[in-house]
Amino acid sequence: MKYKVFFSLDKKSPVELESKIDDKIVKLSLNKEQLIVEDIDAVNEDEAIEKARKVAEKFLNQFSVKYDTGMVIKNDDVSTEHTDPSTEKTHKSNHISNRFNLKPEFSFQKLDKNGNVIYDSQKPGFVPMSPIQAAAYFRKGKISNDPFDKFRNYFLVVENISSLICQKKKLSRFRELPMIELGLKECFQDKLPDLVNQANEVGIIATNNDIIQKVATFLYKENRCCLNHAKEGEKKKVPFNLKDEESVKKALPLMEYVAKTFLAYAEKIGI
Image (tube, rainbow, N blue to C red; front, side, top):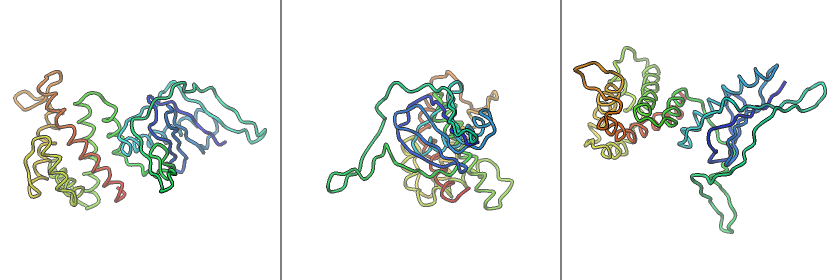
């Protein structure tokens, strides 16, 4: 049977759009805490929900990258709809409807010379999305309110895509720092001035010639290693230490910018 599965989200969608993930239609409605997955082949409701959930999570990962927002499925509010082929009757499970509408965080329109709307950012229509595994880390970072957790997940985006770049180039046994440097060179080969400007915002003074090495060292040695290790006598960043937390918060804009650029590169070349 063909199922349509309705998931409730933890926040309102800022746009109304339709996309396709794994040949399944996914829909969001403007100002609604609801995500719909259509065309799910399943023998029962449980199987339909399980299959639809996998599609929904892939979609939400990519959505977090394209629209710079993280949304989470509410596990206790899922419903389904399907038509029984023998009776042609439509069967629906209960679904909690949205009772409140909130103003979206952003919107803009393009008008023609007669004043007619030719594009509405809140209703972009069909939006193609290519699932990228690393987008899950980006979404996790976007959802988190903890600066240490945000940084770790954004760095995992860079680590994952850098390793894929190494595989694509048939390179192996790369240590972590050289691997990150290679990823930065690939993803910023035509964006070095932008990277220099972003790095300047967090206090890194560099030129096009040394920006890759300085950013890699800053993100990996000065932050990632300090967040992931706690050996006594070595440099580390400690939770609830205000100085350490502020330093990570200061580094986050650069880390997020780099992660988003890596994701755009991965989508562009299909890795």
